[in-house]
Length: 130
Image (cartoon, rainbow, N blue to C red; front, side):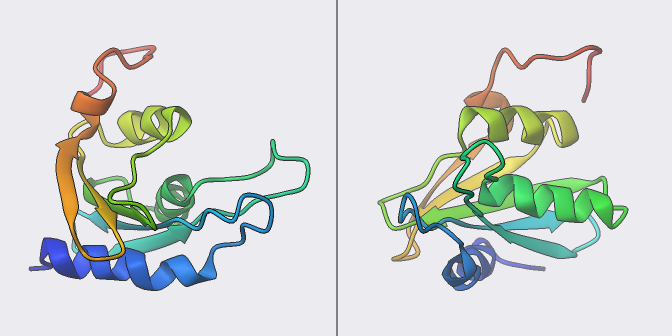
C-alpha cells in the first residue's frame, strides 16, 4: 500500500516538470486510483491564461482519459507550507471523486489532510453523486 509520504514525494518529484513561465508558481500533484495506479500532473501555463491548467486537473484528466474512474487520494504540493486546490479544481475533483481525500503539502514533506467535501461543501451538481 502506498503511504501518504510516498504519494506526497511523487507530487514533489513531478513538480519540476511544471511549465509556469508567467507565474513562477510550480505545482505538482499525484492522484491515487482505487486500483493503486498513480497519475501525476503539473500546472501548465499559457500566455493567453485561459488555456492554462492546474496540476490537479492534469492528473485527473490523464487518469480519466486512460479509463480510470475510482480515486481515493490526491497529493498536491507547492513551495509554500501547503498547497490548496483552486475553486475550479475543487469542482472537477468533486465531480469525479466526491469522497476524495486530499493531502495539501509543501516541499518539506509536511501536509494537511482534508477531503474534497470539506473544501467544497456546496458543490455544483446536476445530480447527486457519491
